[in-house]
Image (cartoon, rainbow, N blue to C red; front, side, top):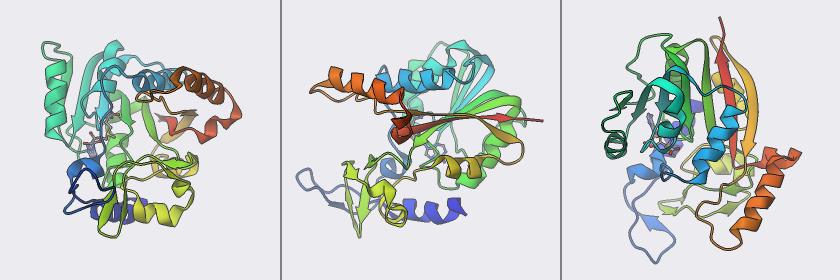
Length: 267
Ligand SMILES: C[S@@+](CC[C@H](N)C(=O)[O-])C[C@H]1O[C@@H](n2cnc3c(N)ncnc32)[C@H](O)[C@@H]1O
């Protein structure tokens, strides 16, 4: 089972930073390494992933749930055309930041909670999203059971997650009792057993994802990929973005940084 074995590696594999000059850091785990960091508000990563979803599913409806919403940078944009927007994340500071962003907007309901135990009725949401989250969830099987439960028949589950075919690791890696800040480690994602041992987050192929998600009435609607949004890239960004756009329109998009998947609950 993917959830149990990898969960142990993820939880055990993180350590606390000890200084700024050294690449390797030691000590007990900082939560943010195993939980993952949200994007900033207003960056192009948000539009890029949401555009990819919208090519395959209408981003509108009565109720949206964003699982692992972080600071809500995606949720606020994704939720524009929903009547009710619910969002949960395990990290209270991020939820507080999100609450401040949407203060005075009653359609947003934002709470601290875990994907493994969603406080919502069965068959409740038109769309459930998990954007760069499932790679961090400790008990992924249980979380996916919960997501299937709260999604209504005919509703969609939108996933963006790290692509195993992307040649660079973008998460922190651990070696022994040291961890290395998010440096790009070439080809580590291709070496599955090593990746499982060293990375603080999972990655997925289409097959992994389909195997994990497609149970109890969920079926694949569409696969897509996005190339790196390069939001924090300074030198030659315009040219690189043009190249990324070209790659996204070519068959080479399967090597993109994230898999974009849309699933539908049938029956
Ligand atoms: C990489 S961040 C992505 C946040 C946001 N979706 C975004 O893309 O900006 C992963 C988020 O998942 C949250 N998370 C991790 N495990 C979770 C769990 N079991 N239940 C709910 N949230 C979780 C983390 O706290 C973190 O905010």
